[in-house]
Image (cartoon, rainbow, N blue to C red):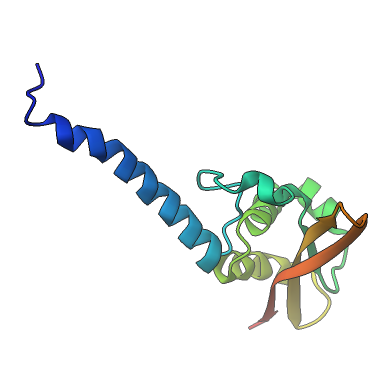
Length: 135
């Protein structure tokens, strides 16, 4: 049986832990480009789902869709880049994609769709860009 002495600790512990989780989520959204849909999803309906982010890779030798269909690793990396387009994920993707480009450099851009429903306008915003030079 729980004593009355421990009750105040438990009474406040759950809300404090929940607020800490929310705080960490918002920090990761701001600092590491974590998509608002992930990490607890506390801002999930404030933007378009990350699945609809567009990833552009220059000078590919074959279409990106074909590469994803042939190599599941590329598909997994693509979802990582869409979900969290930080420098680390873009570098992993660029390293793998360097085998499939015609130049010595790989440039990856991640664009987020923006929808203005009041004015019926669609636009997009560059989230992150990474350039990798083959060794």
